[in-house]
Length: 284
Image (cartoon, rainbow, N blue to C red; front, side, top):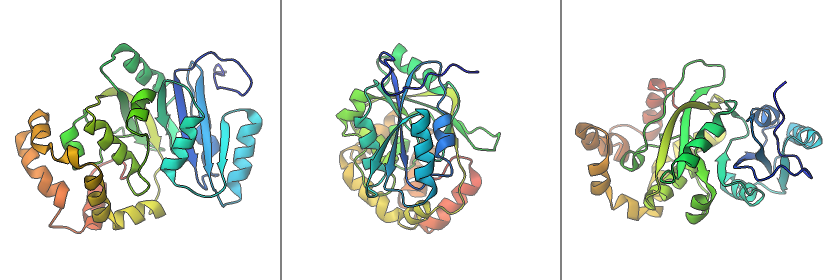
């Protein structure tokens, strides 16, 4: 049996370096599997934030998690959104590195330690991320190298293990609309924080067909993208500078604003449907 390194209430585990924050809204069918997937050979803080779930299954699953001492559970009376739920979880932790995990996904065992080692060994790296798969699918998708220019047009990076002080310096998760992870990456790039790709499977995404939140954001993608641009106008104003530093070929840099910025030739929903057909990367 693998060593039990979960952070259990009332037990002195020293100072863990990793915290995992898991918002949960009606994820009762998956949340126990998600929590159980956090398996490291070192103590990890795990906090589940029940963000006003309304189904019958979630309270039962969370009660079981609490009874086993698998994670700390914090409850919101009403649904406040993923950003607020994550910030609630952040306030309940103290580890120097923080990882956001959705309530229906799963982690590769011992993968967060690899990311944490990368941060430990290089003070110039502010956040680290790896590769992923879909649950039940053996095909691995490899994440891109960190590139703020590409970030202006593509939400192409998975969740990251972030230094706590860096996360707090940019205000944490503060966007209350679609694409809160993209918004955080914009904030990190705007302040010139550096990311590092680690060639390690980290995340197993659960494939959903036509999730309500995904559909809503997809239908409103144009408006949501304009909101993000307005929130991070200083970063977009540096487009020429970022293009000069980008590792992508110059032809790609020229075409990217046309293909991914304004997208004038295709409706947003059709563009993203076609993109999803061409890639194994999650459409978030």
